[in-house]
Length: 271
Image (cartoon, rainbow, N blue to C red):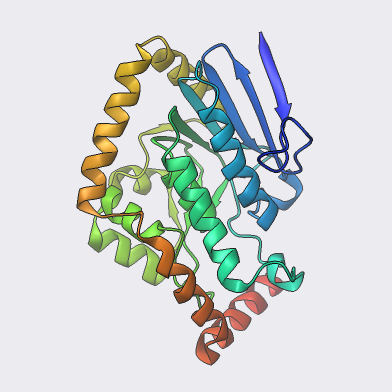
């Protein structure tokens, strides 16, 4: 039997959430971005919803595996830049950057194994979300981009250390600095993607893998994840991201960075 929940602010029980849909079927959970009209762009609310959902799943002790996905034609178009055009007095620029870090850490630290099912665009913060998952399945026409430098901002949310661990320093520098798009096959060559599947089958493949993993003893699954993550943290610690919020805030106010951001947005609006 599948249980469906729409969550709101963590601590408000089972009240309605705006941007994230979660469900549980036996020992398998589903965490799905629910902003298809915005290509699942990561707004302030979405980042908070993801963090809350991750903590909620940690309280569901029977869940061994969670499939992370996005509704519609894209996994995630990345950070929602409309956040800056609709400022909230309760959130400083630094706060916004830190909300993203907390999201990435919450997903990465989940007790359950996480499988990202990627279709369409996986951009910027969306790529950070996918990289915070344990395993990644992508459809063969998936498109990846890390556009932050062209936007005049550094890649934060602990994205750099996690990318270095997954694909190495040289590939991380190239992809982050050039901001060039790359496809699923290249992503697999780098070691970012575990499996490539035909268009329209990422969710099916992720569900099949989730069922295969959920059939194994939960203690061994959790312990293996913890062991691998502990070694990865020794390679490049991703839990030192507090200072990244200051780096991001400086970039937002740096004249050259702001000019780069304006130029990038103007080119995209023309397209």
